[in-house]
Image 1 (cartoon, rainbow, N blue to C red):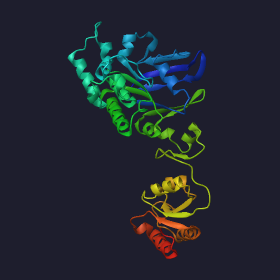
Image 2 (cartoon, rainbow, N blue to C red):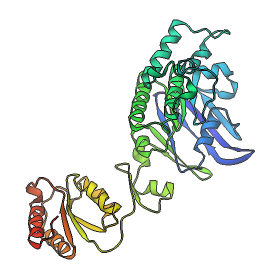
Image 3 (cartoon, rainbow, N blue to C red):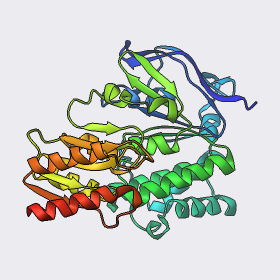
Image 4 (cartoon, rainbow, N blue to C red):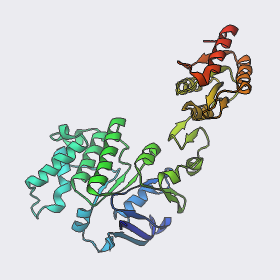
Length: 364
């Protein structure tokens, strides 16, 4: 069994001797990705800063590979731990390559001279997060997203045993978020690096994490695997979601449904209805939809946005009773929109409904 690499015992964190979160117990193995999630102001950044030593612990101990962090010198700690915080770094006359190269200084002598091997690590780290083309640019003159990637390269270049990241994707566009998360996974697999990070993007947290800690209130609320954390309605409770919805299975947010009697009936299925549902929601039009099998990809979106959903149990033919319910709903709506492009054996009743709407002059 693989041993625990990072561990806290009865850790209490806060500011000016005022506790924010008490008795934090964390145990992470080598090569695991451990993610902190929770609402703004819950204490995620405070926890990160306390772990890296920017804030003094109010109580408890942090261990790296069974050694207390308090007993490690600054240079020893720099060889074991790399850190990227959300605070913007201020520099003078540093190129991006210079900034990345500072990640190698814990390994250099007193004069800070880089070897060929150090320079190779710098080059590889910059390639990893796609900032090689910025190497000669003044660090002060690049965008926030580019700065974030340069600082990530600096941390990677440090070749740490543990990597601490506070909202590392906050300035990155979707391409670079995926690139970075992919690189992070590869690092943990190939080099057995332990990672602790905080994230606001719940879909990323669900996909990349080995364990997730949910932070809210004075104590840690829950710790577990993504499958244990993303249970029905838990995220709504954790974040206090009152308007709209969050689908834990799909990691998908939806805005509130429009209230009122349905004016439009949407024939949907096979994922073709979701974009229509959202278009109607944006226009403020209440709608009904069907006939959907309950395993259809449109089904969870329909439950979040439609006033009425006519559905059939998964993998079963549409019953006469369900067909008649849909037909009656079409009678009550002003218009019918058909998002279905192909009709198969299990949804021929939807084809009949389309023809029925056409006869009524309601099909658009």
